[in-house]
Length: 350
Image (tube, rainbow, N blue to C red; front, side, top):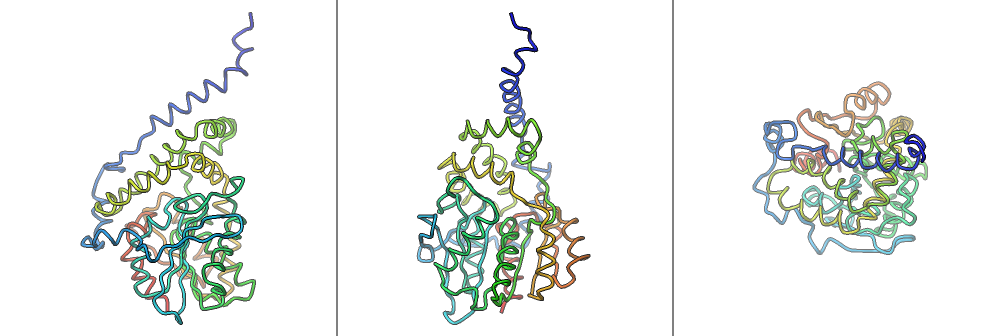
């Protein structure tokens, strides 16, 4: 009869997996009031145009299209032309808030500017990456191909790049890439960008922890439905900071989108747990030296991006990059504060 310790290598991972799943289930955000008070929500809603018609929270059908590029049979585009001869704004959304969730922001921005945006691989209306590769290099190549297919020669036509969160980091990567190719990028506006220091969400922390990480990685691959539901649950509190009528309009479509193909959602989660969210200081310094009009917008109540660390680095090392801090805003300022942010951007852009 084998001893209990002899069976540990066999049953240890099983019991550890069950323990981790129970911990995940017990971990709860108070969705109705994440920090025990609704005062923050009232602050966030102050300044919103609460009279926005419901259609403002959806992309107009005539501005949405689908194209194919190498490696991706379907890519969802938002393209709004205000002045055919005028400059363009390219908007890069974050990790999970695809173009539909950013509709209010895109609709407001397109009132004054030519705007192009697209869904990143694996979210919204764009096919997932082949072999579940979601590295900065893969996303950079994807963005280049989509921009050229959607608007040939766009980087050489007075382009401004705006990005939020992961899209903020990718706007930095794309802008410096275009500049090395000799393109005259006019403006780079990074909204709560990753790249310096981030606060890892719970799932991210567990997936990158020694011993626990590999076990949880196995669980996520083996049970994609449970994984996708967990990711949706962790994202739920982000919607709480939207105006209530916006939250009600967008939450169900978002949830359905994330659960439509749980294998893809789980694969993206695992890939982005390993994504290099930090240590891109050299790229910020490179952009700073280029003398392009670069702006970083930060949120004082951001629990995704480490705002103090990011601001401290930029003020110390990147004197040419302008910084705007909104003390009462949270990370998802594109969705939650679309009117204020678009007004700020429109005042900067030509």
